[in-house]
Length: 75
Image (cartoon, rainbow, N blue to C red; front, side, top):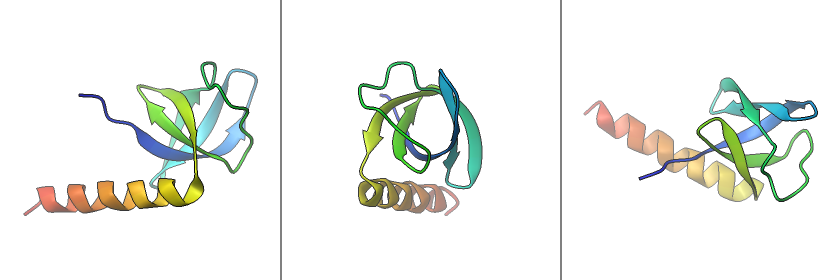
């Protein structure tokens, strides 16, 4: 099973970006993205690579579900 996380692009360079994933900054590759992205866009991140551009509303919903799941692990 693969799991991706929504991240918002904070900074970009030629081949990568810094994204914020739920408050944690990560460096990711943007080389395989099929869509052009800019600072502020949301992307799906898997294994250190941005693999798809995301709708901002869908990204927020996905982050909320992941937070709820993680919170449930402590029970």
